[in-house]
Length: 96
Image 1 (cartoon, rainbow, N blue to C red):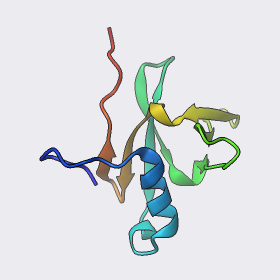
Image 2: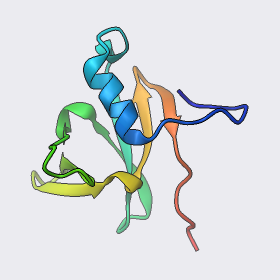
Image 3: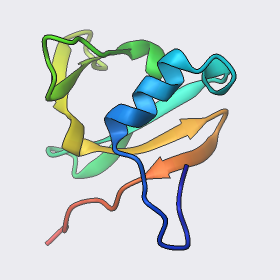
Image 4: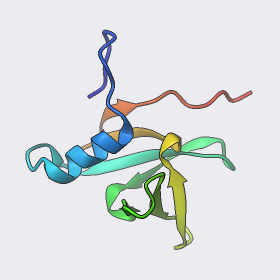
């Protein structure tokens, strides 16, 4: 899914839909990386800790390290790994 020759990269919601609905592709172990504004780094979490709720069409619901459910806007999802291999990535925000 990552592109190296100018091909269109799918938006994150399309990647998540493919994981959910394509049994061949979705059969791996997935992790998402989201930009944490406090720690200013990408935090990796297993997909099992992510809830895609249709009522929250702008964000994922994530179980954080303290056990609280937090909303992560789609634009803060920075990367997706399948079986440890990076398959999708967006550039992190400017760190200035």
